[in-house]
Image (tube, rainbow, N blue to C red; front, top):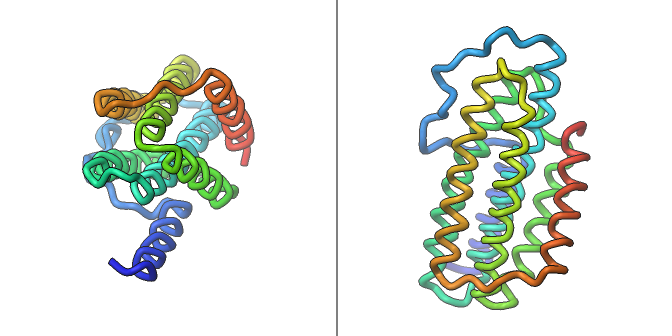
Length: 208
């Protein structure tokens, strides 16, 4: 495929992702569930948490797209593609849940996408093992983050809980797959930097 074609496809992907316009392949795990007595404060809190999760999926799309684009081993490209497709489900589910909660995606989604794309590009240019290690560490931190959300989501918000639970299970599988492909360990200072950036993102995205 020519560079101009790849560029156009990349721009199209970015526009669809930041606007939450992606199809789901798997059925939303909350499709046939119903909220149980949520008050307005609970709905606002759930919306903030799900907006954070939506931003996480925007970043995941950028990461997998950039890492797949720049990985050196062609045999690894299908791994990034498959994980990215599952993450598209997460993006669709969180976007739908935000609409149900009468809320919105983060207005800073283009910024989050651009930042994550740059991080994925840097990781890919450090080599395939380092790039896979970045995936493993990212998914480890995301798993902990989703566990935290399951602990604080309103008890009556069974729909968000179902979505977050499936997302967590998928993230664990993505990390395990990257580890099995020969991921290199991420240095501790980089782990701490990733965690710090994650805290900034989650704090800001909860509100805007």
